[in-house]
Amino acid sequence: MKKLLLISNSILYGQGYLEHCKSDIRNFLKGIKEILFIPYALKDYDAYAKTVNDYFSTIDISVKGIHTTDPQTSIVEASSLFIGGGNTFRLLNELYKLDIIEAIRERVINGMPYIGSSAGVNVACPTIKTTNDMPIVYPPSFNGLNLIPFQINPHYIDADPRSTHQGETREQRLKEFCEENNQSVIGLREGAWFWIENERTTLKGKTGAKLFKQDGTTYEFKEGDIVEI
Amino acid sequence: MKKLLLISNSILYGQGYLEHCKSDIRNFLKGIKEILFIPYALKDYDAYAKTVNDYFSTIDISVKGIHTTDPQTSIVEASSLFIGGGNTFRLLNELYKLDIIEAIRERVINGMPYIGSSAGVNVACPTIKTTNDMPIVYPPSFNGLNLIPFQINPHYIDADPRSTHQGETREQRLKEFCEENNQSVIGLREGAWFWIENERTTLKGKTGAKLFKQDGTTYEFKEGDIVEI
Image (tube, each protein chain N blue to C red):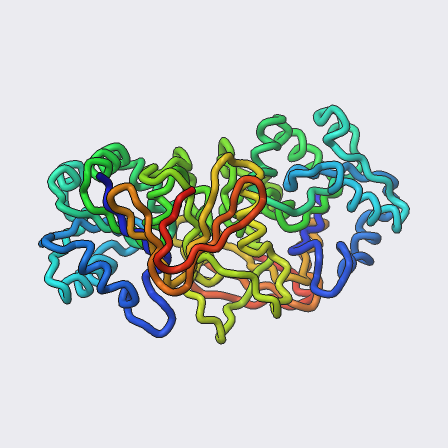
């Protein structure tokens, strides 16, 4: 009975940190008093933990930064887990270095609520092959926590028809992914998130998501849709 | 006596394939009749080779697609080499799979002219850690051809002050690279390229390049500048 909240972006334009999905975060964690936080996607763990602590204190949840603890023990004892955004390669590399991939996976598969934002969404996927991040470190594998059976591209952005930039659009990049991999990807726009519970994936937020299928076609999901791939 | 032409982008807005740097490509290859082309960054090698062949035929240079030959032999016999753009991970993975990294490096270090565009610039660097591409395949290493002593970020783009998108800016991504690596990076804007010859790196094109140094400072290079890092 997995329970995941997978959020495209931590900051939505013009709003505070995780403000745009705050009522869902509150509902998702109902009855929970403490969350274990994994800050490895950013360089300064303490500063990052402070930001996260300030946020969760407003909904009466205390935050334990995994970097201040014995990681393996903390994961076994945690009542919920939050992995925040930053660089996905740096984050995944650290999860491998500390050898906590399997421990996290086992807890989440068995029901520990998991919140991931941005890089925390990428590592929840089968692989990190649909991240937007720069490969600043070489992890021992691109395999992620594999908590869901499809790929998500967070911060999904539609091509800007006015742009003169010639780098690949996000759509082109995701189609390249489909050329090399036998998996579907959902581009999750900023302002959207997935609530996964009781084997059901519901799309939340007003901005929607775009499915890229193996056969080259696409499909638009909108707020409230149950996502089946 | 290395000789490299490293081009940020193959297509500049409003122009044809490699049109914006055509007179430099012609001068760079003066006296050369044939170029060996590596198409591995795109999926359809034949279609890619046709595009490249159509282009080079206008400056009287014939193109040999490496995928139609024995790669090792072709590299030994080539009088010049062109690696085109596409997905850097797919390209580098194929170079490893065919075991031609060292062969290319040896030829270029000993003077065979090398032209790289976009992904062909990324693989010329010490590593591909400053690519913008999506990591759609997992290469056995991020180490590149190591033909130059610094990193280049092709398709460099300045942050758009009007943007509401919250994904990292290119500048933020390159600063993250500097947090994790002991190397400087040059963001090479679309429309700019490096001509490297006689141990001298000259910046060409009107759009310029931005150096990101380890100490967090930046420096703007402009057209005609000799780049020393």
